[in-house]
Figure 1 (cartoon, helix red, strand yellow):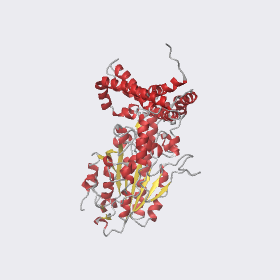
Figure 2 (cartoon, rainbow, N blue to C red):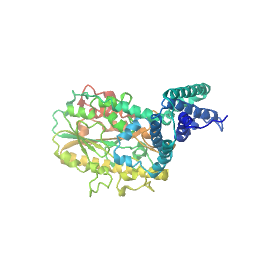
Figure 3 (tube, one colour):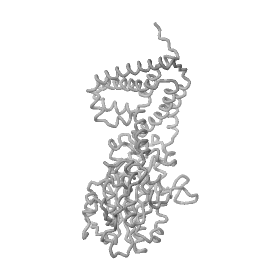
Figure 4 (cartoon, helix red, strand yellow):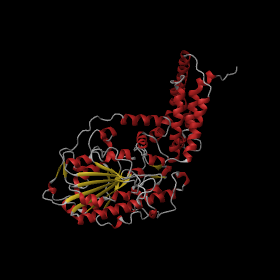
Length: 546
């Protein structure tokens, strides 16, 4: 008896065919990790690996059978083929798992940064794994019968696939459970389920925005150390981008990436700071909120005011200067200025973007003309990849040979690291120049000045075959979580706010996190408010006569 492949049978088997393709072709990153997690010997993991393949195919088939109707399944599969081909490329190419924060990072990254991820290799991969299968699907001669018949076929496929999948799961559970429990990153690598979950998670957070932003710290007042003072204060908070602590020579990195900061008198480098997230869209709103990492959600952060609002409640003027892709809602209620748009003929810009030094151009004038105590936030472009070589002027191409393409697969790891290290060298220059400007302003304008620097998150540069950032925090490597943190105080500022420099230096190697920033900034400036938590103020132990 011969099985005749008719248009009906092709339509009936489409869920199985599509599942085989998705599991086998678009999940290289998943299979690479899963095989590594289950390979106990030359062939020890093969049975569970084959079983897992069948289990996934059957599970996908069961779900697709639910929507195997005319005008439904084909459009869904077309979308899945394109989306999974893109997701597959990024996971294979950069080792980047997919979760809701990655979707947020993509959605909130500006066009210029998005273009840097584009390459011909990506185009070819999407054409081969996404567009070509989609075209073949469009040309496939599918014919569906009556609705009653199709429901019966779909239910039969669903039941058969589910029963066999359940039997496989029972047989393999003892071998499968440890691998899935110990390797939580696998769920972020399995496509298209990771994409679907990530988009759903992002949508839930994005579209549940509160109607009203709750006030925070409206009781904030300047403390007793402000009393009787006639000198203004200027505090500069520099928010770094994608700078990882491991590549700062101040943290004992072999290359001299911090030659200027190493000579800055009074600079305290805190070597053990952990970030709140692994992407700008998470870390920036988190670090400026009072929530802390464990209580942070995007919805909660957007539903209440943050650190900059508390400064304003206390009577400080706040200005946000941006050379990145925006403040992620943090600066919505303060003065802000975008300096990231290139201006023709500006030596601090190229045709695509501006260098971070542009943040400093008007800084002396801003300080000189200010009439209130001032907090200025400088949001850097920093070390944002993969086009590291674009982040600095030519004179900072010190370490090499450097990678000069956004297709990192074409560069050696050494060249990628060299280009990245040059971004840190340029950050060293920008921070040191900022300190020099603040030191000069303290004398010229008779003000007390200070600088706080921290990065939003770190970066993977090929360790464990991971690149860039944005990995789910629960599985993110230290390279994406360990960030630099520095403090510089003018003599007048330190004396005014009774901060013991030797005590601060003695705490430089203690473990801190972004959770400390909110309360430390308030404590440093002697801002009294009920929301201030002295236990999270890393400077509190080093104050006296308060």
